[in-house]
Length: 250
Image (cartoon, rainbow, N blue to C red; front, side, top):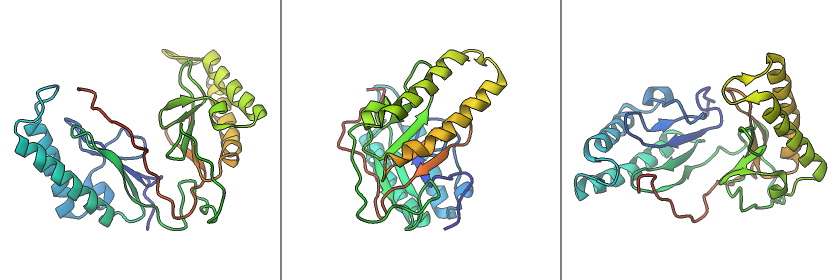
């Protein structure tokens, strides 16, 4: 299937909310239209009608749905739309969080021979370790103000949570310490060259982290465009663990 510059990791987020379209791309910020994704007119129209149902019949907060029928219609349409997206977007994983009906998970799958890093997926039989903090096998290398250098399913984590070698852990901690020292949450980097050298160090660390985590994809985020290293085992589809999800308004 052709690659899309709007969804370079082939993960399409279905995150309905009020006052914006429910289909969101890689940066989880900018909504995508049916035209952006090459959807059929019928499916694109169905997505629009589904969004209109939310905005018309969900009253927000604790008031909830206007009628039980509207809630049931919304849930039924959600599942039909997910099936349609899987059919029309082969090679994509659909990650969904269907607020306000509190359903989330994955559908679809990556095309054989493709991984978000652009590398061939690992051979069948590759030994892959599971970590409770990263059950999706997706780890992000990213700085947040006074946070850790790594992030996974449940938030920020330290190198020790993934059993990374001590020397690599120290390098990651130093990378984060530089961010804390040289970046201010209101004014940004003290000098432009510091931002450039910090991003370059992140790109150096990225493949080192991925090499320690076979079967995982590691995403580096130091600017607008994420960079990937590593690969999933061929034929593997990410799944969320059994967790209880409660909408923020509950």
